[in-house]
Figure 1 (cartoon, protein in one colour):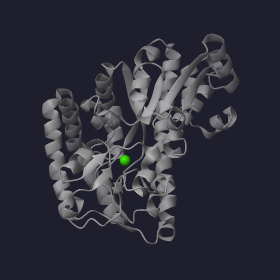
Figure 2 (tube, rainbow, N blue to C red):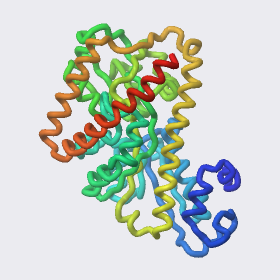
Figure 3 (tube, protein in one colour):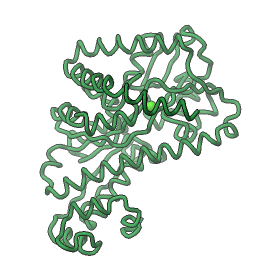
Figure 4 (tube, rainbow, N blue to C red):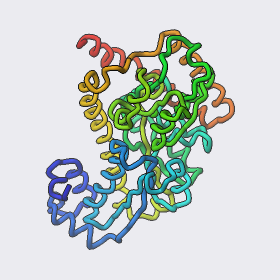
Length: 369
Ligand code: CA
């Protein structure tokens, strides 16, 4: 997209003009470009992602961020985005950014549970907040501040990087009719959901996204949780596993931008402001794009996947998973006071938001149905 198309699309026109604030012609495309290019240094940053380049829905967020920054800075702020296809190290993004080999990263906070359990709740919590509720928590409920408190000790900032919306429960080779069917199952499922499933006999593992299809095909795992119909079908999981369960574990999975703290702090204020705007815009775009891609995929699903069974896990399985979720959270909280603080903060928010969601969205969806 060239600059004019970008402005016409309106994504950042107002924000760019406000950020570069250049007198009476602040709204003018040319004036904004001149003001930025004459006063600000040229900066080139590197950004590493956890996603193979083919996973467009996730990879689009950092690419869009880079485009936003190029446009707003009049071409002076360049962000070179390296996918995991290039770095071959999808789960090293945390260390890349901490060490400033890359000034930014795009990934998921719950991948870092082994480094710091307090990072877990910033992606999503089983039976927790929806995407809409989580957005309110991050931006108006203190969530972003809480996240940056956690990441400060690792020398990084972290910001919401785009929400996929509710995720599906995963692909299984065999049907799950009872808790007994989960016994001994090897499953790719990261974060807390993996911990919870381990309590009911599953062996969870976090295989990088680029290796999921092969792992399922070769029987390294019996089941794979990835994201949503659009991205799951693109991976081809439906060719191997014929039982697709609905979600309970990632009700609003937020990706994250990681930013090296020292690199960010030494930027001119105008660049820091641009980055804030660009991250928020590309994050919001992911939520909208995710919804649209899934709508399209789901409407074709009966034709593309006629032999796939879709439905929720049995009630007794879900009840047990919910019970175990509380137990796992309490255990991690006991070991990590900082996780306990974040969890308590988020749970308090859930208590305050649930009554409104029930009487607004939930009530309406039942009425519409
Ligand atoms: Ca997932």
